[in-house]
Amino acid sequence: MPKLTFLGATGTVTGSRFHLEIDGKNLLIDCGMFQGPKAVRIKNWDEFPVSPSTFDYVLLTHAHIDHSGYLPKFVREGFNGKIICTHATAELCEVMLKDSAHIQEEDARWANKKGFSKHSPALPLYSREDAEKAISLFQPVHYGDFFWLSETTRIKFHDSGHILGSALIDIKTKTDEISRKILFSGDLGRPEIPVLNEPNQVYNVDYLILESTYGNRLHESTDPVSELVEVIERSMQRGGSLVIPAFSVGRTQTLLYLLRQLEEEGKIPFYPIFVDSPMAIEALQIFEDHIPDFDLYTRMQKMQGKRIFHPKDLRICRSKEESMSINQHRSGCIIISASGMVTGGRILHHLAQRLPDPKNTVLLIGYQAEGTRGRTIQEKKETVKIHGKEVPINAQIEMIDGFSGHADYNEMLAWLMPFNKKPTTTFLVHGEADASQAMAEKIRKTYGWNVKIPQFGESFELE
Image 1 (cartoon, rainbow, N blue to C red):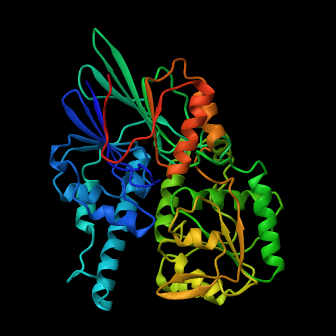
Image 2: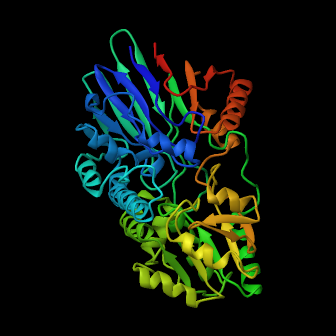
Image 3: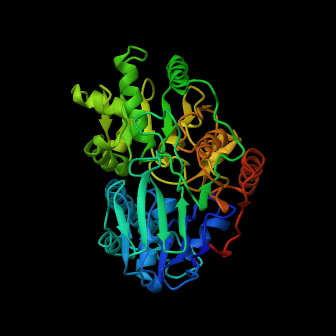
């Protein structure tokens, strides 16, 4: 019988890694990096609990680094099987894994230069060469296509509505005696998020592995687009600039779509809008190539000849020189830069420059994990440490929750409602402990399902 072991995303939001033994094959569903506090991040350096060389497949729910970013190390340690995902996920991973490898190498180089590493020499978690090898193993499929693991087990990817290419992974095994469906939600999207489709509905699930990032929270019921207009207005009235930390893949493109739309509707003036993230710029082209994967309204706009992700005064900053030139614009501009949780990237330079000035505004538009600089800014502490210095947080801090790509607990419960039978077990992952526990209680109370919150390394026989 299938056996499922939880090797990540337990008690924390990141590090998605689930080992499924089925039909004599070893599958790893997601191969993500741990992110957030140092106590969590150092798990990336641990020896993988099972030899990577024994795995036949990696199945990816989507391209975000906490779901895909461990792949180059996994490959370096012996994995040489196939990586199955959607076409858009494969294209985004090519960009993101190379970028992640570059960051690993730069961090090691900087540590050696400054001598602050405990290791001599400091080494990257993985190299660009490792990332290239991982990329060569991708074998993408389309939504809805059947991928046959064996004569009795098929795998299918459904749109999960979280980011471009994101998928629910549906694994069904059938013999003369029994049929069993195992569903991995990955990160479950939300209704009415601009550009994206709503999560597909799946039925007849026997074992469900469900995220619980927002298991104890509801997204605000206010209109996030109207809130965005108000934040822009307040920011510009103060005579400062608006800085938005945003994930390079998904959030940045959604923002550009909305800003372009608000300009066309006359709700905001044509401000200079800087996109300062090399990865976001590469991802932007992939998004433009995948308009057919988006919702009907977005496709209709494309048919009308609109440049979906291009506000009128969009300024793309590829080089370091173009990034530094943004410092000349002290007011009346919008700066979108990565990373979304302020864990690294060019956003650090912009925040170091602009956080001390009360005329400026920092807008947080997504979940800020515990231990990140984004959480420190969200909590409006006196200072935040950037590049070894304590930077005063004097800028106005604004938050809009409605752009999150994660379903809240009501949205998850609504998605579960059409399940036409109770899963034998629902496993909750991708949540801090209190969020997972709250979500478990809500599912038990609402539907009477059997819910478990697995521990790291815990295994279950899927009877």
